[in-house]
Length: 264
Image (cartoon, rainbow, N blue to C red):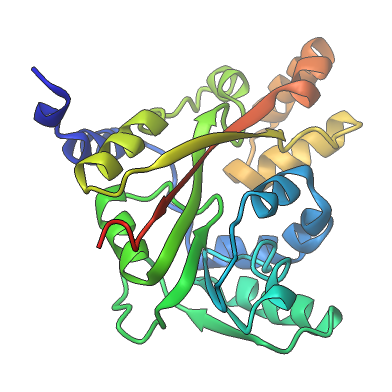
């Protein structure tokens, strides 16, 4: 068997289909929009992502899964126009609010989901998808991103760790099927002829700022939903025994990009 014989796209779809991870509806992200606006523009992850963007000779950028505009607004003054695309009205409202707060006017908010018809989405020089590609069908998503990019596509995909923490999820009895490995994503892009380039970004986990057990419990509730009294007791015990691990466990992202001009 050679690399060409491996159907990475099928492997990806089948593993996602086995997953019992909750599908996040727009309302979930609406509730998180304000909190995600706080401090995310100055985060080490954002700085690392933006520092890797080559915007030379580019005038437009499409930020897919833009959230409050963390990436797109960070580079808007270097471009003629930035489009922020998201399926959450709350996130798009935060995107526009953050643009006004920064006196940035060369932006447009676009409400689309991955599954929608994107024919009205403009083609831009650069397309970015920061922490927005853990989708049901990565092959379809990659083709969609590439079709909207004249020059380059940049994205990140989980490479190590999880948003909630694998061990604490198991303790709560809510262990999830892991996402397909990022090398599966690279394999899909390779088969599509997109010649992906790979780097990594290390990020603090979502609980690094939890200085108390109550903050930890509240953040867990935000991510996984309602907690029973028994769940809260388990989390109190877990935090007491593993506070350092809870706050120090890192999240690693695969930073993947490719040139669309070279791919035709």
